[in-house]
Amino acid sequence: MRLASYVTHGRSGFGAVLGNGIVDVRLRFGPRFTSLLHILRENALDELKAALAGVRADYPLSEIELLRPIVQPEKIICVGVNEGEAARVVGAAKYPNLYFRTPSALVGHGWPIVRPRESVEFDCQGEIALVIGREGRRIPPERAFEFVTGFTLCAGGAARSFLPMGWETITPCKNFDASGSLGPWVVTLDEIDPTQPLRVATRVNGELRREHSSASLPFLFADLVAFVSLFTTLKPGDVITTGVPVAAADRVEPPRWLKPGDVVEIASPEIGLLRNVVIEEP
Image (cartoon, rainbow, N blue to C red; front, side, top):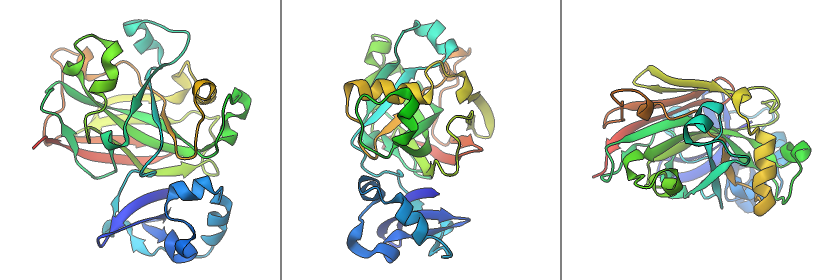
């Protein structure tokens, strides 16, 4: 299934994407569920899948605006260094380098990404993200996917010149309001084999800036779930973004920072396309 949250005709909704349309879950379940997060918390995905059998989409995708798939996750935990190239640049570590994002730092597919006033050195990189479906603590790697609902994509915007002290200050530079995005939807594990490599490409104005596969991650998906759940209880709807190679924009001369009007596309054949336009902060 492809699960999405959206706005249409001035009303918020959530449901499942079928072809070029979306099924409104509220029409099937009424007041029982109020959001995708509610469905995850109630462990009702199987019930939702059964309810979708033989139904038609209620709205075409052209009539909706997609929001973050999980509108208000409790936690968004991000991996700052998770590939060999990046580790050589900023120093290898035995454990993942983590930071947090606030939900307000990430918009949905199609919404503008805002370059903050504090930094014209602004870039955005494509990442694969895990969406947690079950509560768990100290999860062993071999059981990690029992707690994962599926995958989505993240455009990890960063105000690079807001790093006056280096990588230890990465949390502020990654948390300007609307500086990145998440989406377009969550693809559940019944459609993706999490043990197989997932590919992701970052394009700016149609130009390929970066392309990589999850097979290159030294900290694999299951390892990340196990490590994060060691120190915090993972809850339904929590998001773990899995990291990227070393930043493309600040490793070329001259740097190619994003500017207003640039179109950022994060694409994965297994997940979908996340597209946003960069604007200047008003």
